[in-house]
Image (cartoon, rainbow, N blue to C red; front, top):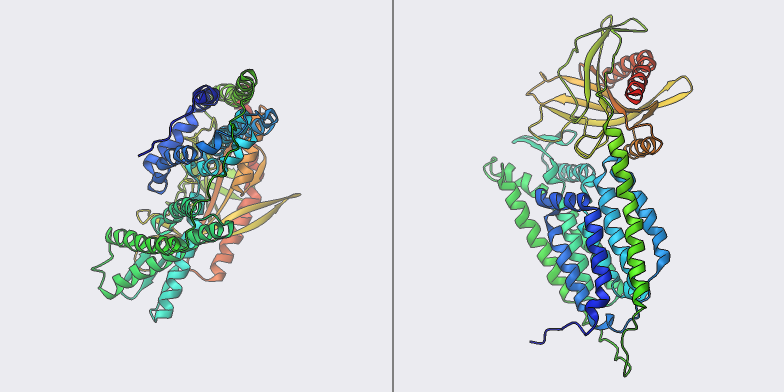
Length: 522
């Protein structure tokens, strides 16, 4: 067996890049560690452990071609590197793992043309792009794909002749109740299939059309397979009287079905594989033309210095903001419009964690009751942040006491400002009609700005920190009982919430601003 070996002088040429790689991982060690922790604890991203060794192997395969390429550092790459450092800083300031991890991987990719030049980077285009599969990104698709899975399953059941009653992601058929939870979304199937399918297409095809076609297929097949998997599991439980495909069994059956479908996809794809294109013969005496050693080391040093600016700035801002005291939000006992304060009427609370202060109170105006839940956030970080994928109106698990059966939005005019609200219909998980039903409105309050967009809220928090205004922010939930599911009952609930919001919001915003200023003064 002929094992390739590095040519003489290769280690010396690789040394600046290797030291730069080690330096970047040291500078951004918290980000790299967070990636590895996500790989370890989440089954959705366990496959990412394979990405670094696969990338190294893909680079090793191209070493003969790399030996012939000139090494010419591209110093202008420092400009996009500085922009990526700023992206990382924004992500670090608002605790967005996906932003910091994507920026880190992009910096690692850009270090190749910066130190070795664009000829080398072009030769390594696929291995460098494949490195982005190490970023644990994709869980934002879970709610959408849960909806798709529920839509298909229920439509297929009805086409089969089985009556279905649906409430959000929960549905009832004559033989029992079912729920579409996170594990049913198929996101883990999709991400794993996309990564393996992309690698398969690169290694087995030379035609761009065939590669793109197979990659698209690797995205479509797991989605469709997951839909049929969910339908077949429900049918298996229905036909067996819930003796099969109940509990953990349905997960096992799901993986077996998915494995068979994906295996068939790769077997069929291999039938159209193309042999590797032979490497063009090198002209006699052709060899890599190294750049002057001083220029290579200069490029590596400048790239490290530009990248280091972001974590240094983040350390300074985090140290400054961490000194802020605990917030003390003081709300009045009574509000304009005759709203009298008291204990909350219901027992529902949102699934928001990490708030520095939580206020849960109720207000009444005659027979009308509205509950206020307010979570105040300060000195935010990865472990406690206002906007997070795990902060939800209702936790989407079967263990949760509550379930979200419908979502919508509305707006409220307050003076010259149009205030957006998220709207949710929440029901208690209880048999029959005994469970509580609530109409819930939600909005973020960030230093006078009222927002419902997670992206805009994150950007506003980052901008406030960069301007030296801290990262104070709050989430406001208003809830009121709904006696039944009729449109008239929901309209009456919205009218109560609107009346309360118009009376309370100016006072609430003043209390939040006073809390922020107290923290800034100290």
